[in-house]
Length: 298
Image 1 (cartoon, helix red, strand yellow):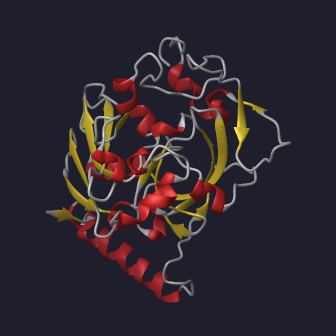
Image 2: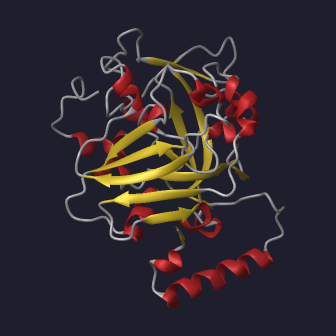
């Protein structure tokens, strides 16, 4: 059964919010498929990459292993209707619609740096909501320590899921304090547009201080647990991909340096730029890893 926030929120609060949203929608003169988000103090002032760059240079291995494959093959993915099953150690488990998890009236624009483990980077203007707000609404039970995520499994629509390489569906996970950090969002759009299929439609995770593969796309399942969940890349190659996957220029990938990165769109003469600790978000997140050996907990 698909649940709405009306099922888990006091009725008066829910009705007031829906009335506000209806009024806001009626007043809006934006096109039917445009989105908007309130500005956020968490956004970088760096210039975002173009929409064309963001949507045509991707890793989304369910659609192929080339950078152009997601844009070429993701059109077959059906994204409406869509629901996300939230369960495990929560007070109000259920199957929630995207609009209930991330209503347009609650969207924020978060312009974040993205650093891929392959040593390239972008700046992306996401539209999303804090994951902490969603988890607080479903009620995190005492004892929960981790959050596990799964991508949709539809080999009939996702061509690479018909083959091997990864034990599908794609899985990721965060420690609970990482999931509750205000930088962590569930995104449903970018550049004032609904999320393109190749970027993880209709709803995906964004964790800007970690390598991009941690920001799982097309999420259908979120589970609170007291055990560290298995993740796809760590299961596939644990010597190369750790559970934490924090951007760290001091800890190289076994096969290449992580000290610098190539900014997509910089051009042939753009050179490489130094990679920043925690992708430039150290002031906000370094405290969560105080006392940990980041070379061991990579």
